[in-house]
Length: 282
Image (cartoon, rainbow, N blue to C red; front, side):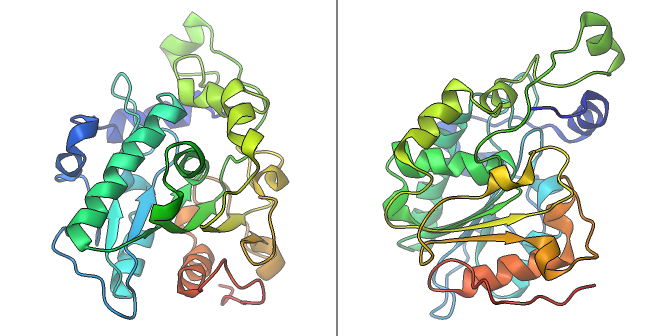
């Protein structure tokens, strides 16, 4: 993907953590969880029987990506869980997307065992909003997921990657992708995305909500994030159709109070988000 290398690599240097292994998903969350997440003693209530799993985006850790949304959802009484995945050479969420989906599958099973729930809701940002679709469609995850909410998800890819020269790599300039299989997988027309979308945008069972911003500078055009599916299964939301003066862009979308409202309302629905819902514009 056409991520700016300088800003992202600086973030990675500060926040990158490594998973201890796919088989021990629970151990990977120690001391890295966002506020309100990964209380493995949490018991879902009759009002909120479905745990929420937060899935970060490329180069993001769960702590950075979900530091604001996680406590909002936990404060609403939900059991909230989050994971890191795809850590390659110390860089989180940069490995092959199909491998990351397999890590998500293990984590979801851990959450279901710990909580006794039958299904989870998934909320993902960027790659984290797209990658679960591989889990649903190719790894048997559909019966275990009630709702997938994607915040600026890379569902159909974005503009091509420009690999940095050795000089740019050393200086921290240029574009990422050279060292990031997940970035190559998210290029529009990649072999991975061709396979992912060969079975259609949705699979039978889960509901899907997509929340996008017109000011997305990473997953472009922003309409490529939308999913094609029946009205009773899929809702696509553009933030500015609700709040025209909300100028949030890709990276900060998970921290936007309007997005928090849209996610919270979507998770309250029996199906996808209610397209008539109007959040409070700030």
